[in-house]
Image (tube, rainbow, N blue to C red; front, top):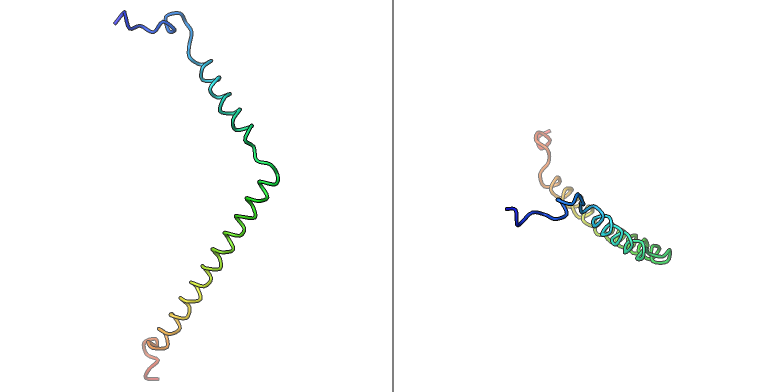
Length: 84
């Protein structure tokens, strides 16, 4: 086991500077790829368009369910109302 000892641990150095260096690299790439205002506006418009498409489909599905519910209720009146 002596031959496998960590020389950095024996010398009192730790790997933290390497971690902070890698963090700086990561942060550097994040900052260098910050989107422009135009790109953000394009993304926002894209999201709004997708939301509108989703809501259109969602509302169509709700309307269809409402029609099916009304048809079902017309064919199956609540118990006790047939004989009144």
